[in-house]
Image (cartoon, rainbow, N blue to C red; front, side):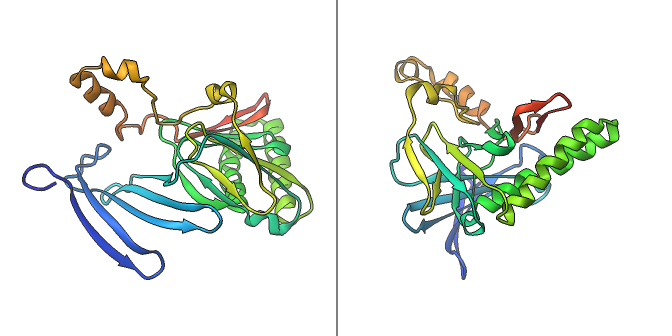
Length: 255
């Protein structure tokens, strides 16, 4: 922060991604580090889609990190679907914001954003790798507990993921975002508008929607409390929920 409490900003140029804005946010709410919290932001264009801004907040002292992706064009809430049937389909681009929910049908996995969810830009293979890493951790916990049935179920899902990567088995990938900030991008992708009922059932992740009438009647003090409640002090909650839609009794949820 500057002398008057303003945020310090500077622009760096990186060979691979161009101009990057670096913002000093002050003290870290996680470890208390003085002046160690920073944000980096950069805008880039995704072919056949449009401009997105990737933003990452991080602490130089404790390593705290939280990322998000914001689509810079006005897009309505949509459901995007792709059927992955061969290896080249794995390169379908995935833009997932903090409010995006991902479903992988054939293995019954759902990635639902929690209060500290992260946004990212990757491809279908990258999403499968995230699920694989989470499953490996959950599998180890269940192995230590002696839950052989849960371990067997995890092994089945892990094997299915490997088969998908090798083009041996299909998987249907869906992404939904009530704020319209997530998408799948590729030749085989199909999309449609989300219904009002579908939107109501989706998690907003860390975001809170305040109705206009309610916002007008909210005092400055209450608004400040709302802002503070949406701050970075979220180390006591899971980053996101990854769980089976058809859960095994011993493997109901991975956080």
